[in-house]
Length: 107
Image (tube, rainbow, N blue to C red; front, side, top):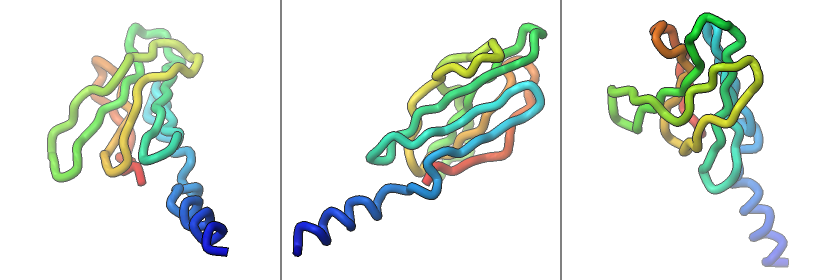
């Protein structure tokens, strides 16, 4: 009986309600997909053909500074961009344009 309770507690720790978080701005879209243990995959796409790309930005907890994260994705096909961490803030942006989505703090 005790092992059943331990298994239920392990499943309760996974943020199933937030397994996928989507963000977008003009010309760029991205998804954060929960993997396990606080780790996430970041995907992005940029359907416009104006020479700019979609790329994630990351901000550490307690910081006010944004930094570029992972690969630039310059096609309309979704591509893997980076790994991400729970507790950090992320937004999808277009390189060279300056527009970014609203912020998502990964649970």
